[in-house]
Length: 106
Image (cartoon, rainbow, N blue to C red):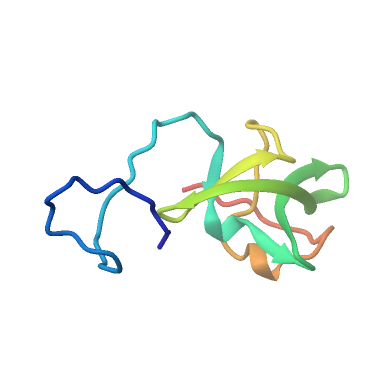
């Protein structure tokens, strides 16, 4: 919901205080997005768990991210991870920094 100020043509049946519905169309812009379930909010900040491989194994490493728009189960990522990074999606809310993970491809 939003407040919209509009000019009303003279002679219109519209009156002060009425309610109406409308659609605001904005231009499309490219964005990096992740499934919203991969973004975890802790202590007021947004994080994702980047999957990193080392000689000790595959671990989930928590990375603070800047988020933007959210729509249809996707969240815009404005900074904090690169496009090529692999991040945990399912179960991300149960992970802690440094947890061992198993990567399963669909």
